[in-house]
Image (cartoon, rainbow, N blue to C red; front, side):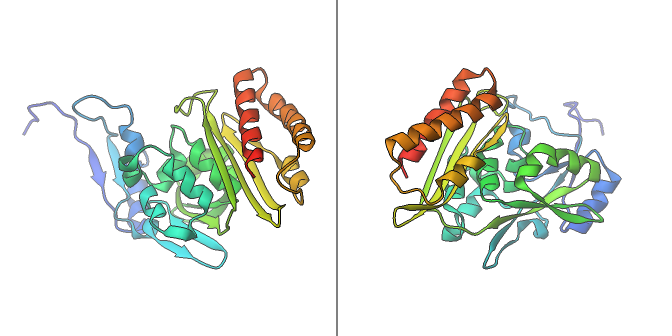
Length: 281
């Protein structure tokens, strides 16, 4: 019977395990993987939503919804929604809790999966900042292979690898750590494609007024990891003195200027964030 509304029909597959998923995906290689769907629905304002012709729902794939913990790592299935990660409690790194709470609103976090957020074509830098700083790794799984890739490497080449290997992110492995001080700041517009946008993040551990560990990163159109500053500040007493702060900012200014070329707004925004973050330790 002909559809009186002339609405195109979509094929939706709901596998219960990875074996079924890859079987469907092999038959329909152009199918779009679908978890929370927030990225597919983003910006759609018409009465009838537009969906891919064929997509594969991940909501029943149990392998993608598992959470496990060892003494060293927290492993989160890629289909776990952001709100469920927050419900895990104190085992989730403080910086990650802060970042997730800053993403969208509660309704979005109840739908958006961690894997989908990593792959999102919009404002991906929020979650990537904490995952790179925490030295997280992602399991890339195909029908015949599984391997791990660092969060930092995934930002630069991960999506191409997924397409080449017809693979998906199946697990996120995050080293368990505790931070005595967390600072993060969103810069620019909320649109990922904003050249002036990004996320600045600083994680710090202190003991007896000494900096014992420090991670500082900016993720936007480019990634800046302040490795030299992190190394130089180890063992530094806090609060940081005025002269030491000036010297640190000079070094940071040179790095930011070289990475951000003529984007003065972004340079100044990052340097302000560094000043505020270091002053708060």
